[in-house]
Image (tube, rainbow, N blue to C red):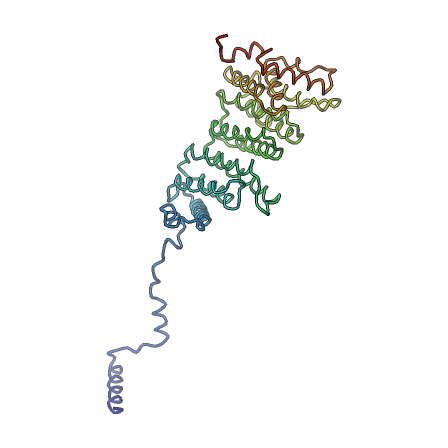
Length: 391
């Protein structure tokens, strides 16, 4: 047995010596293993775009993968933006619908998932083609509901830092959506949604809405392709924003003055009557009767805008102001509508007497509002706008 093995070994050594087979060194074996091709990569595990596609197709669409889906979309957006690309490798509209569905999982407050969803929506809005108007409107409405009117719930509601983060996330998302579509109708639609919350019964809600509206208007004015609305919507929007000048909270009134000043400045620039670096209007003051200042500013709005509104916009302004007068809402909202109405008609002096005290003015305004609500003492200019009756 051992003799056979010995003879076999000798024969193999003779073969190597004649050069028929080159001996394989250990270090050579290591180099050959290193040079061997790596196994094929599984794209759905490492490629964010492939993960997004699989999520859209339903393969990864489970609750625990929602945050990964949002992060994958944002990762693709950042990578393609760095390369100077303007389109996405997946269906942008379908991704937007999924983002909306994720945001709708939150009902009371914008949690971490909704914040990531708003950030991701802002990322995809930088690419072509634009999102559909219906999808943009739906996402904006739900996000405003969550952040502006949201009520923190649970045992550990978010602190001030979390609230500020939610407001900032919403602001950035709305700005990116406005950058995607800088049309006047888009801006008016966003501001009208905010105006609804500007008349809320909760001070915090009104403050957030006014702040966001002012920020968005300022951002719109910085866009080179933005155009002021030329249709009746401007007159209607102007009333909705100006009513906040009658708000009981001084901070909200100050923010409303800034918003109206921006709008007035933009309108004059659009009309070619003023340069972009012109200062905002000077708001009237009455140091002896500070309670009057809100009323004076409402009167000033009518005087400022009257000569710059078209006939169609003036009619829309009067209709919107009248709607606030007869609406069964908060008293300060109705008073704001009343002053705006009489101011644009040039009859504001009938509402304020020099020697009257605050209680007297409030009592007279309340009586006049009641008469108008009952259809009495309606100014002829407004009566022409009301629907005709058979009586």
